[in-house]
Length: 295
Length: 269
Image 1 (cartoon, chains in turn cyan, purple):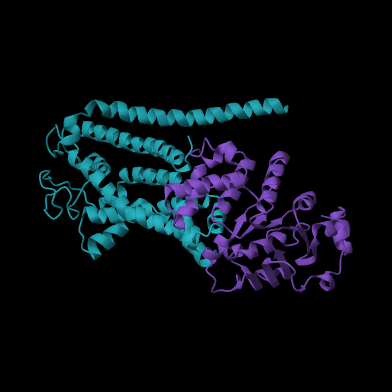
Image 2 (cartoon, helix red, strand yellow):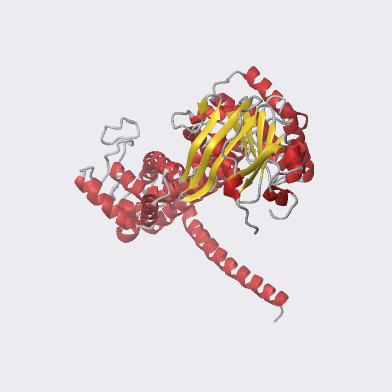
């Protein structure tokens, strides 16, 4: 068999493999959208769920998911930024740093249900936060932090060392060099990682079942005082998210239109995650252009 | 590789200077971990002249240059002993404000390393950080330094464009302009033209020759023709020692040492 023939066969095989993967993904996506989209309406997106009769929506779950996401990102973003900057720019290369990096890597592969049970024991039981948005947000932070930190660290590490030398040789302090030269240059990568992390958090269910709870009490959207018990912003109320809702009604839902609600909710979930991914790409590119002053 | 008895001939002391000295080192050693890379170098650099440092790969010339504005501080395992006298100040003393010192002793690196910012901001950025905020003042310095670096004509209409879009030679001249913006006394250049094509190299060399009116330049180069073309003094480094130092003319025509002669006539490198 000559080289050219070999090359042709290899190319065809690779095309077939990637084609199969794309086909599976596309089929899955199309199936979810085709099954779910017909049930999605403004009413479905805004009205509360009904446990026993048809016609319920996912309004509260959708709001819960978004609120939880915002809280989780508010906690995990600064922490991961600080940790990533420290690990990449300040930590000495010794066994301690390597140990921390390895620990982060192990944490990032922790099954989310384990994170959920850990959050249950610590935040729900020990700290007495109960099944609440706060417990859920903290559990999601634990779930997301290792990946975000690694992403920050890797984005910073991919900035060339000569940029650091350039800053220092101009009499800038290490802090100035890091915050004004290195982080801006790494920002597109960092932002993309954060948005993708947000998408992951949005679709997460297992870590929330035992922390944010499985019930979605009615919310009073006219009172935004976070200390009011039915306020949408109250962080200590239980909050079933969209992903948890899908899991729950599929395992024990008794409303007559359970299949339709589940399909519709799944479609909404997929679309939102898709939006996160697309916006991450677009925003990352836009930011890179803006930061590098190029046009 | 031929062996030379370097310990006897290495420059350890120097006579009293006849000219104004911008920078001098005494018994400078640089260690990377247990490895001694620079083994006691005493040199003095005259003000408003170009001094070249030549020598084979691994002779320690870049290491020596990076010690002069304490860039070796950034390398975790590096240790520098001895003194680096800049005016009455020992740059190598732990009390020195490294960041202030680096404004006086600037550096240009082997590979052009402009920031991922606009051409204008590449120069204005450090100035702003050091307290020059007025637009008019910044504009003036940007124009002046770009002219000094011989880049103004090429970029004056595209100052807001990304510096990364410039060619390698233009980027390197931008890096020189950026270093000049801080009004340093001394400019250290680590093989500033080795990553450039011949035409850019000659432009950068012209730039350097222009600059010695106002600045003291210390240039590391592996290109002996370049050293001969642009420098007033040349130091020959070998195995962590400065073996021979003198007027460039003399070093290239009548080297005193066999090692220097062998190196400049291309017997090893």
